[in-house]
Length: 472
Ligand code: GLU
Image 1 (cartoon, rainbow, N blue to C red):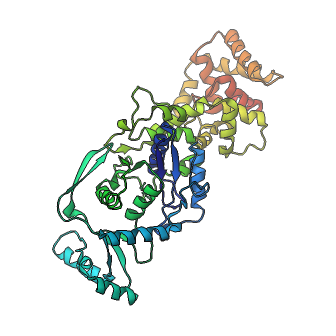
Image 2: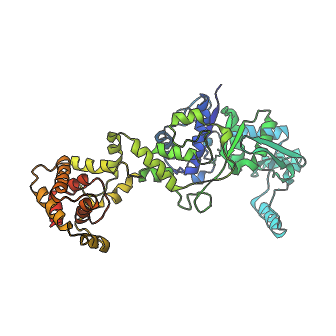
Image 3: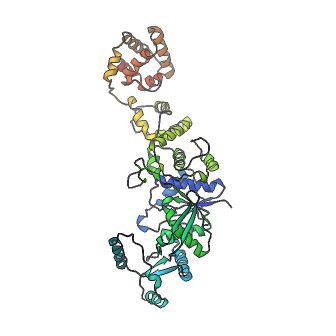
């Protein structure tokens, strides 16, 4: 049997790039040995639920070329794949634990708990539930249940000894049992906590490898105690390092850090995003950075996941995106970039627009950037800086060069890039001027700036009328 992994997001309608990075790792582990990649929606916190979030997740993973083998929209054998539709199961298993004596009903009210918290605060100690309800007698419990008192079900933790959890990335993690709180498994509204539901679901969905953020590592001994109590095998744990922003803080929606959709809408290609994200916390054996998804499936190896946090660097992502854009066929590139052009092209021909876009194919870092790059072809006025104006005065040949360009271009009947290239040669022959003195004066006169695309393209795109006017 191949590995089975799951991506288990909360349906918030937002795909944080740290979450997506973890999903990519999960996908690669499953596909590396021909296994299944499962989507499970963890909506036990109903307040955070957003309409349409499931489609949003499917859409994101589809764009990234990661197919979900089982999930809410394509149920497999172990559904439902949405936690709020599995409440009966959690209840049944929680009650089973009560019967086994490893969990108990807790009737403590919110007031009692607040008081306990206050006392802990005063003693400057972290609050930890003291387990008082675990001492209730059978009769007391029955009485309270009969009276309809609200309850939660808590896991009874061992008070002595040490728990050891093995993690592929972090090795053996040891935790003193005395610091483990009698955590809530089932809340009074009948919903499970994450801490309970993840164990039940991972077991019932036959998940073999649990890959998740390392913030869950210290909780994992509690999960193992649950697996033990049920007599189930625990999965292989792969806790992955955090992704930090360039300010060293954890990436978060609250800080306005990028989500997948923000990047996609700015014109980052999903394949480039995936390639960049996989390197946040993982490094390949060979010295290589650019991978197709198939190559990643083949090469991904959990032994090369790092323990240290990774830093999200938009510049590096732009480097990848630039490479991926540049590798597109011209046709695919045009399809990709056209929608990002926001400048008014109503007076231009489609050929003109495509030529313009194509000459920026190997300059572009992301789709929207096209608007910043092509400004010189849309502005009516050009600004010539002081230095450039001085340059135009700096050589006695320059007026002749400009005059010759003007005459030659004026007499050009067919305004094509090829003919314009010939004009440049003619000007060179006629004036005997070459190099910088041949190209710079016309560039500066027609665009105001000394850099730009190939000169014949630039002259062609600015257009005959404007070029002649600016050369006058
Ligand atoms: N719902 C959890 C989260 O979004 C999933 C953690 C896990 O993968 O187990 O952080």
